[in-house]
Amino acid sequence: MMRAKIGKIAAAVLLTVGVTSAVAQIANSKHDLTASNTNPDVTIKASAGQNNDEICVYCHTPHAANTAFAGAPLWNKNDQNAPTTYTMYGTTVAGTQTLASPQAPSLACLSCHDGVSAINSIVNAPGSGGYVETGQYVAFGTTAAGTAFTMPAGVTQIGTDLTNDHPVSIPYTTGAASLKDPTTALPGTWNGATTIGDLLRGGNVECVSCHDPHAGENPTFLRMANGNVGSQLCLACHAK
Image (cartoon, rainbow, N blue to C red; front, side, top):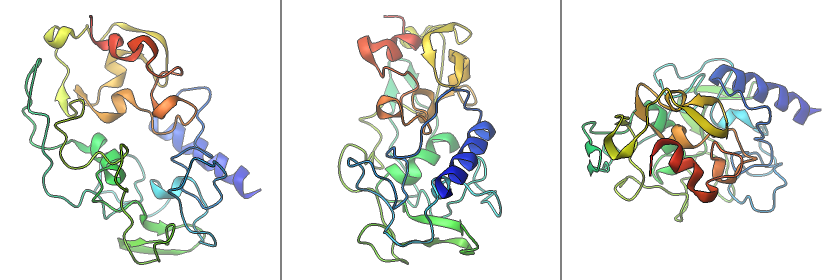
């Protein structure tokens, strides 16, 4: 019953953020941080017995959201992006990156993946569990409540040095780096997009241009169901 209710809440959030995929599977994916996640590959999740066994709560809340954060709707995190600076990609084949820091859509992802911000930080705990405007740390794995849990070392820890990752918060400029016209229809089936322009945020390439955080059914949450087989995802934007 509880999981069914969670599914309905998740569906409502997906509609809010504009995900149009017919199948968006968060439950039991690596973005399902609840203790009841039965996926044997998922080791980063809440401690058993926590009153936080809701899937959406680690990013979203239906009430008392952090409105100061513009990267995602109904944001339920406060202690995110603790570092004051990130090292951006810099000079690319498309030109020099002019923005000094990641923009809000990518900061939403980095709020877990930068290895500094707390994954287990929430503002409004579910089930009348309590509201703390500055954020509160729930128990996570072997980490006790009240203690920040950050992304362990590994490929999922992007870090604060973004120079070895695809540029984010960089303008999509037709022709540069062989980039196609943003109005071009995308090949294949993409979650929540039919043109390249649908993948951009404020005209910029961001983390969510390639990844849909709700599409747990896709490899590494990529927006294409088959991942990047044959570099299809790359070639959708780059005419190579």
